[in-house]
Image: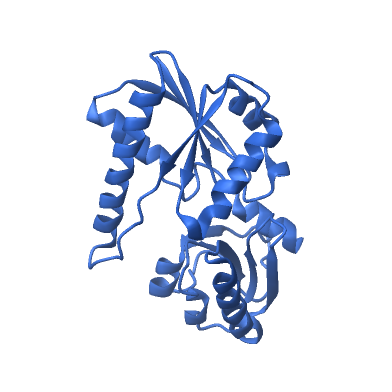
Length: 257
């Protein structure tokens, strides 16, 4: 049976790869490298850098594939994402059928961790449900952007006895800071949703290009640094053509056991 290895490669630093991830890369007959266009060529280049550095199996080959752009959200965000995932499922299916033999092993190199705000596993399940190709899936966890963010800011993720909520910028803007968690980690925020938070005494720890030489981190009272983050983010995106960032918001005060 064909096997797909879904490998978390960390948030941007090649040295974040685990020993398990390196071993998995060297098990694969084919490494599938996504290409998201010229604007995000750095992301493909980093994957190639990782392969150059850690893959010692001379029989392993690399196959690039284009990733379609997601359409602008309509009135139904879920429908837009669903259509996009269906397009990618067709690409994955073709790669598996065309590039892997009956007992071949392929690998998808996933930014961060495959289980945290990444859809590769869901898309592969779509491919399986189509019924055109049978394959097994193995998942290798990776260091997340959340871990990199906390490490760069030298902070603990949680306060003592206090829950943590992981959400998206869209949900933060719609729902605000939750009542049942003192710490909120926000991912997939393209619109600086932290500006909508009413409590300007909240503390924000923000980071972009985490783990890379281009890393930028800013922290402070939200009311004091939000404009600086917005400006810094816009400048960085204009300079590179893309940005990957995340942040942690913490209510003022220290939780008690």
